[in-house]
Figure 1: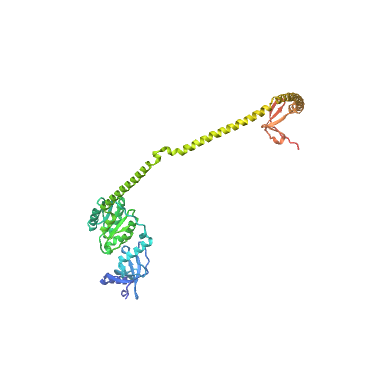
Figure 2: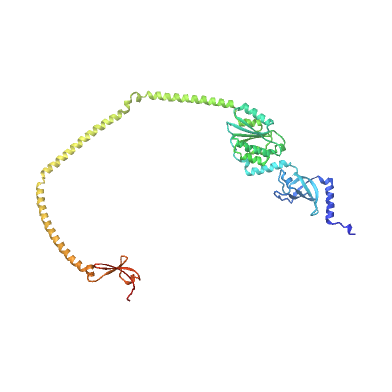
Length: 444
């Protein structure tokens, strides 16, 4: 009886085998709405697919999810391809999604629209465009070496501007390796010191042109310091590379025409400017010569002495005026001298000199007497001061047995200034004594 009962594991294995063996469940095409989606970076993705009446769990491995050309979002209606299997641990059945694309819009178009929106928000399409050099020396062409693009570019450049150097960088322009190869050759061209880059390929489907819609290609073009001309597809095709490039050309021929001028036209322009320059120089020379002739015919050069006629006349007048002023001044001074001389004759100083000499002798006699009296007074005062000073002299006091004491050249006035073992000097009238303090007694 117990053998009729199955374990849960056995039943689950049986049902799983049914799922795995069913050919209709091995390749299933479903359409539904994404639900319970939360992007898990660098990991497997788990979500649900639902419609109005049912829901199924879905799982997409990391490798398959990284190949998607769009970003799945909650509520997005999608088309999926996968297989139905049973997950034994929980007993739930689910679809293992191998491929997924938006329902109603192709995956590439959806991815292109999302990338355009992202780069537009970043401002990548509105960056300042670099100016193409007018007379380039080296142009790098990134395209397939065997396509019609390079032939059209070579033909156009040789016809218009054969002196420029074209450098072909063979580039993969279609397939999974194309984006990385385009980026590599852009960076390589930057190291070759070229003036301009042309990136091009012929027309095709969106899948064929997809490498030029890759984000890494767009960012590399935008970051390049060299002006880039994009010529991808036909005129109606617009890739992201066209939007971020500095110049977009509808065809490879147009790209070549934008990259180089027409040499013959530039030579004609140079010759025309040379002619205009020569004519302008001749006109300028004629005007200068006419002015020179007019100046040389001027009276200044024919009669140069007329330049300083007025100055000469003015100098002569000033010279005459100076002489007249000097004569007037001399006459005035002479009159003043005569007047002073007459006054001096009238008031001769000889009498005043005699009187002043007599006064001088009298004053000198009085001065001598006053000086003798003053000297006697000062001498007597000096003697009195010397007697008084001698009475007050400390040396005289010390000769009676008095002394004074110093410590380090400082007078000692009190025992409070002394401590034991201090070195002191006792000064006598006839010498000094060096002593040491053995005891200090202070009287209250």
